[in-house]
Length: 277
Image (cartoon, rainbow, N blue to C red; front, side, top):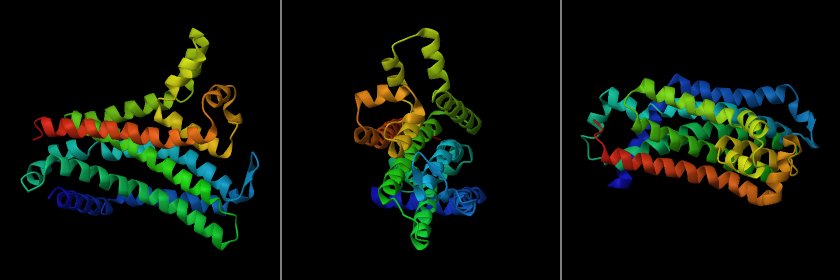
């Protein structure tokens, strides 16, 4: 019953998203971005020795870091609270569907509709590169795909927790936007300011910075094509002195998944315990 209910919610939510114009705008944005990069000859440029599809993937990851988190937050935080305000939840829960099936079905459906367009855009670039005889770095392709999936999962978990916790859609969107601004500010700007102002222990400050999933994603995507992290300056010495490249890549993939899972479990627990309707 639980499994069947989850699939019913997933199917319903995916079909609802496919009818949304914002889903198609989002999907075309990534597909169009890849097409523009090929059209402008970015695969022929070079950065730190990387050329061809590797160069395009680097740019793709940087754009994804800017777009994916805010899109996931804004599109997902209204899932539960929106259904509550629109009286959809009262109808849904009158059916033989458990609270947990509803919650996890919503989360899985959101992951599918958010991650699949990004993956298809990246896969399309790899296929086109194969057709046009451009060297395809399949190891980077699979690692970047895993990194993108982990980024989506962590912000999905945070979004679902917010959606269960708040009482209105306006509050949900405002909270999501504040969290996004906070995480973006802590990528570099505030960390550098703290180090200059307080002259604290750099190891502790950088360790705190690594709790930020956006910072972890950014560093993970950089270390895949720049093993020495030369673009990050002196910070790279602190990171690489503690862990090697392969260990940090594993951390960059699994830490956001773990963090997103924790928030999702908290959200599901709260959803099962409080007065939903």
